[in-house]
Structures are given as structure tokens and as C-alpha cells.
Image (cartoon, rainbow, N blue to C red; front, side, top):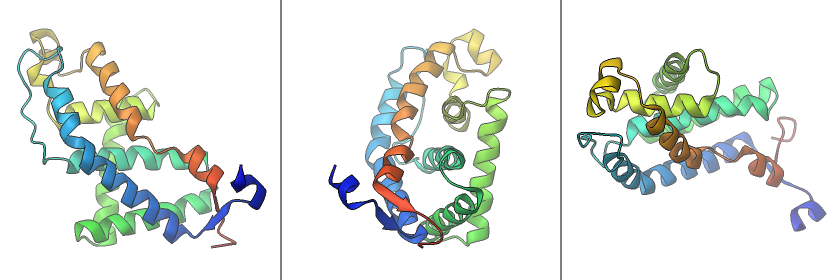
Length: 184
């Protein structure tokens, strides 16, 4: 309520990117071991998947690419382009890459999510499928789904429930902060 009385806090795209990048990295680092345990103990697998609790980079890139897809719902095209560029720039620094290298990785993951999710446009569903394929989980399912190399619907639904926790709450963020290029 105080935020409404005094207005939203104004943020530059640099500060908005910092908040997003730091929060996303922190939540993935802290929760990835639990994600691995969740996957390994899922009853849909007939063999326990071999995923290292330190192999979170693919998961982080899936979460990043998926969350960036949602930005267009909240920002103008110009604001979206600038904020995405700042976010990619910050991730490039974290990974010790150039902006161009990091942008290529994000675009590859975004394209991968789109491909494995086609024809659906549900980004959350695509993120779940991307985790399934990037971690090669098909080989651990029963013979039918293993031969199809497709996630069982039950496994996919469970993965959707997990991935929902990694969607950035842009509604709350933009309710609290004002991001406007003319003010940045």
C-alpha cells in the first residue's frame, strides 16, 4: 500500500537487469540440487536418471530463455529490447563470455524451447520439454516413451509444476517498480 501512496520506485534498465540476473542465478543455484532429487525420484522413470547436482547451467539457460519470452507481455518493444540486452550483458559477465557469445546461447535455447514445444505456444510447457531433452531423460522412461523419446504426460505435468516456480513474477515486479526508458 505504501508503494501506491508514494508511487512506484523508478528503475533504470541496468538496475532492473541486476535484480533479475542476481535473483535468477541465486534461486537456480540454491534449488537445482532439489530439482535433481525430484527428477531422480520421479516414479515415471524405470531407471534413475544420472544428472549431476552441479550441472545447473543448462537448467539456468532454459529458465533464462523462458523468462525472457514473457517480457513482451509487459513492456513496449523498445523497452523489451533494451532490458533483454542488459540482462544478456549481465549474464555474459557472469559466464566470462562476450555479449555476442551469450546472446547466441540465449537465442539457441530460446529456439530449442520453441522447437521442442511446436506447435504449442505455451512457454512453460516448452521449458519443461527443454529440461527433458537437454538432460536426455527419455532413456530412463518405460520402453514405450523411451522409444518415442517423448516425455510421458504425467512426467511433463510434474515438470510443469516444478518449472512454474522459476517463472519470474513480472506482474509483481512491474507493480512495484516503474521501468520507463524516458526515466532511465
